[in-house]
Image (cartoon, chains in turn blue, cyan, red, green):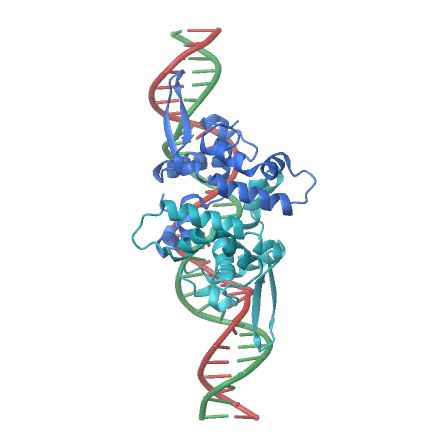
Length: 137
Length: 137
DNA sequence: GTAATCAACTTGCAAAACGCAAGTTAATGA
DNA sequence: TCATTAACTTGCGTTTTGCAAGTTGATTAC
């Protein structure tokens, strides 16, 4: 369970951030929750990129431990859980927005999904505020 | 050499970005070049976080292939090479700035290095422009 | 001009992380 | 009560990482 987070000890802000969400999957999970309004294990598992189940469980646990995500029972379906971003997690909205803008500028692939890119380009502040308030989608 | 960049194929801007610099080390390398003005293999190798030599070589190659970094001989020291960020690499400045701000807000560790955080807090635009122009340090 | 040194890697191998498939547990639903 | 759903956990083979040692080519020291 222990990852190579010796990086964290460097004290550098970038290294700290990487120790929290710097793996291949965490940001995609955060994207699903922040932008797509996905909130359950099953929905996260069936996302576009195909994360495997053990890794998803591992990452969610780590995100919970680092305070980006909370987990609670779904009051309307007692066998399901609801995962939600905390304020700390939603505060990554500006990071996500800048990444989206950068990719919009440099991903020239034909199948690039430009919908979100255009949304952020058109009104970045609104995009960020919505995520911060958990208003998406 | 092939990484699990199937993510890239999803077309999502976040997944695209992760396929370029979404591993544990690339952003630290970019930070060294953008913020600290580090430009040689040896200097990168002896950074605070202690990347191993084979991984550094691998990452630099990937960053070169994806167009974030260029490599050329040092004209003043023919046995050394100079690594530099391209415009595409320097355009990550806003991403780095937002990550620094986020970490500044949430890294409460005593040994957290707040110098860069305060610099970005004080004048984010100037921080970004300097990196974009390669003026640091 | 020859030997040590330095810079930038490459190689080999053990350890860790990942990915897939199958199995477990607990709550519904038929 | 028996099948199904949701959320995981476990086993195991593959891939990636990390550490140490070795290679190559360009200075520098003697």
